[in-house]
Amino acid sequence: MAGQGRTDDRDRGAQATGERALLAAPRERPAEVPATFPGDRPAPPALAPVAFARPPPWYRRKLAALRRRLAVSPRRIGADAAGAAAIELDRGLAFLLVPVFLAAGVIVYFSLEREPGWTQPAATALALAAIAFVARNRPAVHLACRAALLVALGMLVAKLETWRVEGRTLGAEISTRVTGRVGSLYF
Image (tube, rainbow, N blue to C red; front, side, top):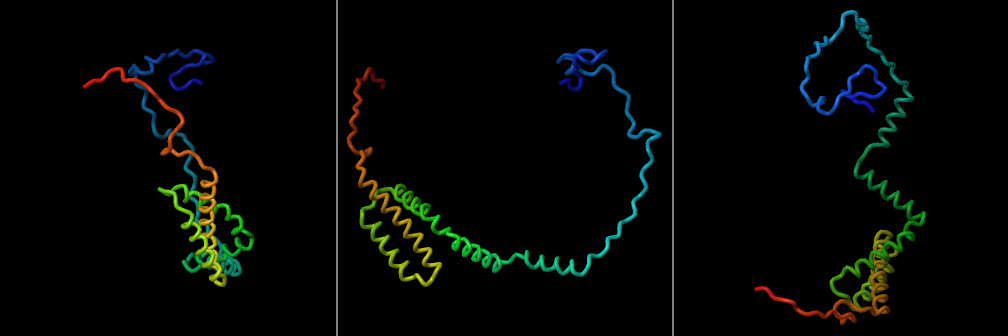
């Protein structure tokens, strides 16, 4: 593609320019180009302001109702969120979140600094199961306790898997030994 100051083989009568010619100072200054040319088209006539008709009353009522529906307030946001949560629970979202909470428990277990014993995850799971049973007539508390119970069960499953598959850890003796000798010491 030929750019400004470059020629293409298809151009006839044009001089070929190299990189030095592109960077060199111009030899002659082009004539000043006027901002407007005489004989141009005349300016278009000024447009008259457009008068818009008022919308009919039924349209204004619908528009006002739409504005009321779209109004944002904390109470409305909370009510809409609660309604959406109820719809999703009716559709079975809570069942779909079971593996997510179990995986969260596994992640919590393996991110601990030291491995807990059997009593801590088991006691936590039993306590949360009892609280969820007692709070079954309060839906929000019941769902929160069930979610925490699933996290505790995920920790229990991770503990069971670590107990079942006894693997060598870095603190234990490793079967590979590396031997060598010191060639020289520099002080």
